[in-house]
Image 1 (cartoon, rainbow, N blue to C red):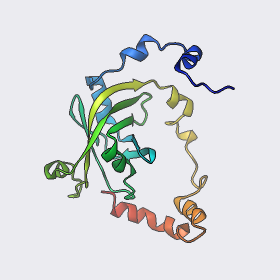
Image 2 (tube, rainbow, N blue to C red):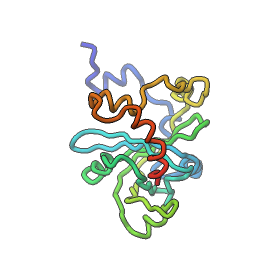
Image 3 (cartoon, rainbow, N blue to C red):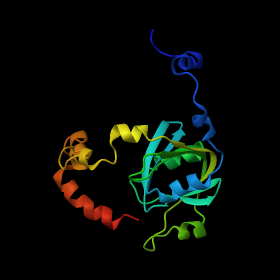
Image 4 (tube, one colour):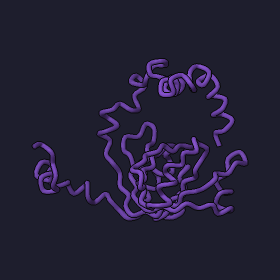
Length: 203
């Protein structure tokens, strides 16, 4: 009875966006938008595929997403869990979305586009860290880019240290694995070994 099932019904509740919400969208990186990409050490990558949707964190040194030109971004695929959910999706459906965050900065930056996965040797080598190149680089052709205002960051207090989770307040990865696997894997041993494993396989 209370489900919204048409665009008309939705717009009747929310109205039309203000001009500032429309004019901020461009099909390319402005100088200001480029500055945010180059300052960002963290982004989320959203993809779609036959099995459904995926949203994956990506992080590295600021500017880890390279601006190739005003309409193209390059995202190296660093070491991870080898599920490659995002990459599987991109192979079958090129549509992607990125959300960039910069610690201490209120606005976020959203990029929508189409992606391809490259393993060109020169491109991989150009992203090498500690002589370790990524196994692939995702090239993103920009369709739309725009900033998101700071309300979500303000409401969440995301950059407020007093609201950060206290050590031990949440279950550890080892706790979660042990619970799901009924103790077969995970646990304290996993948590104790993980920091060194992560440091040895960061790149």
